Image 1 (cartoon, rainbow, N blue to C red):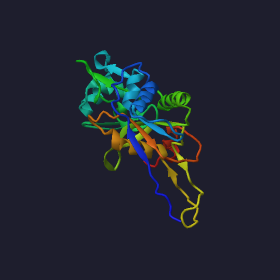
Image 2: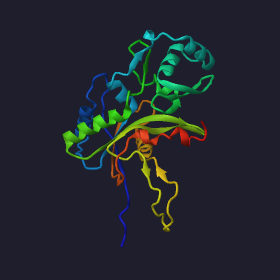
Image 3: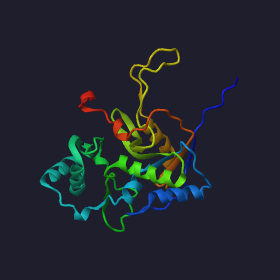
Image 4: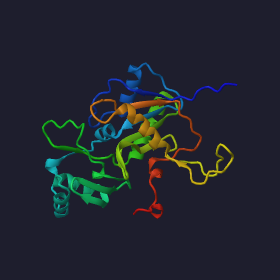
Length: 257
């Protein structure tokens, strides 16, 4: 008997508006689906760019309001960055991991190892000001709030992933990574399950939400594409939901710390 081909459908919501502080993201997503003449199905996953979540939550900071500390000034001289930006990075971080000219890698307060604590100035409408955009205060909570609202309105069991662009050690280029997730398993533990030949898997844990984020990034883009929300249809999972925080390796397992 022939097997039906496995397939996924990715849809970037069209004409998504620029997001401002206080905007109802769930409502904007619903409007976007209506513009695309799409209904909701159980198992749909909505992937949102971190920037629009941060903007809606008011995580913009005017650099003119930031007074850099002596520590920030010294570090800024080392990495050749704006001392005010470095001050924000330090406020959002637990520790500096690496610092050299034009590079500042930190452990974010959420546990993420990332450049500049995820603080970004691209695709931020400044209106003549120098603005910086911080990560959401709690991306998993943001994802859960959106999931609950979308499910309440649509009646469908949906998942939500908040996607950010990360560089990776030992590899060039950025890729989408999940910093928030709800309604799906961010991490799927398949240890003990059989492989194709019946051998029990020993170490296989799948970064499910990261794979979703990277897939959505292919449509979202990284520059002026203007596609910050992607609907993914056709995913299947059986593991219970867990947040994106589960993707972070515990310090006891970190061989490079």
